[in-house]
Image (cartoon, rainbow, N blue to C red; front, side, top):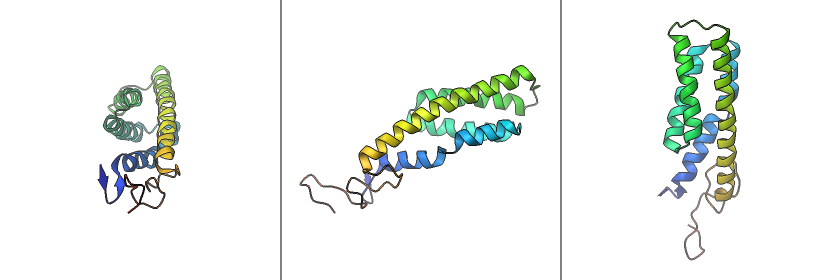
Length: 136
C-alpha cells in the first residue's frame, strides 16, 4: 500500500485528477473543430483510466462517446443527427466526469489534508503517520 512513504491510492487519485482535469475542455474543443480522431483518443484514454479506477458511470459514458467518435473517424457520415448524438454523448460524459473529479478531489482533501493533488500524505510533508502517532 505504501511506496516511498506515499499512499498508492492517493497517488493514483492525484494522477487521475491531474490527467483528466482538462478532458471536458479538450472534448468540447475537438467537437468544435470536428476532430473526431482526437475526440476518440480522449474518450479511449478516459475509458481506460475509469476502468482502472472502477468508475463505471464515467467509463460507460466514455465508451459511448468512443463508439460515436470511432464511427465518425471510420468515414460514417456525420450528419446533423450524428453530430447531435456526439454532442449529447459529450454532455453525458462531462456530467459524470465532473461528478467523479469532485468526489476524487474530496477524497484527496480528506486523505492528504490539502486537496492539491500533491500526494503528500496525512501530515502534509510526504511522510507516513505511524500507529503510535509519530511520523517518519
